Image (cartoon, rainbow, N blue to C red; front, side, top):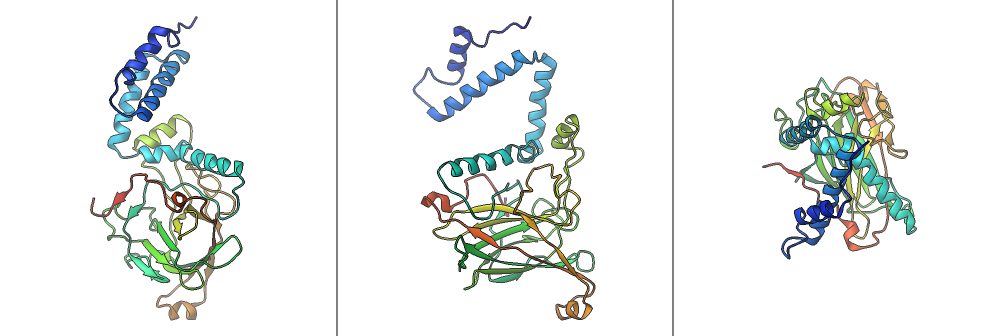
Length: 312
């Protein structure tokens, strides 16, 4: 028979003391969150009859997770970040807000301050010329009525052909494969980049360690991340998953959603390739983004989630 004490007045009173409810200092919201964490942790220990070894093994795992800077990766891998998207969708649907390009997870690899360009730029630094497949990515930012949004900011970032991101991969140049493009009068953006590769979790890292215990892989399909914003419109965090990837519908981070598949077209025209300044085949992908009017000024901006800075 399982012994339970969490609901006794003495233990509940103890948790309130630990969460700071018996003093006038601190933050009330923080106290409520910590109290709930204490209560739910105690219930977990009791109901699953965790051993001391299991509990302290979990504490040690959290230490390693933080030291490896993989907490954001695990949040995606366990579906928590996708759940937040589903919850936002449900809350907006409940008040009659719908339409537009679907949101999906940001992931942990954004870096603020990428070069800002008008209409077009080349994203890659040329270090993979002759190795990676060049790709032209373009599209239009429009409203729910199909009207172009001039001056929208398209902030995009992606991995290289090995699945690595600049800043986190120190072998890459600063802001490689990261740009901010301001749309032209027709709401259009265009970049020259490379076909990105999907990536897998570090096989020796704590995220993959957890996934191994769940019998799951840690692979992501090839994709390009986007922040799309414009005055008066709801900020959009999303990503486009490439149509030809093995893991398109088997993404360990659950980011693939209907409406977010980019159809990649490979072009074998050597004369056309030469006119762009390279040889061999190249790829093209077009993706348009549809923004909703912002219901509040706050909705125009992305969350205050901590993000990397290039000089950090």
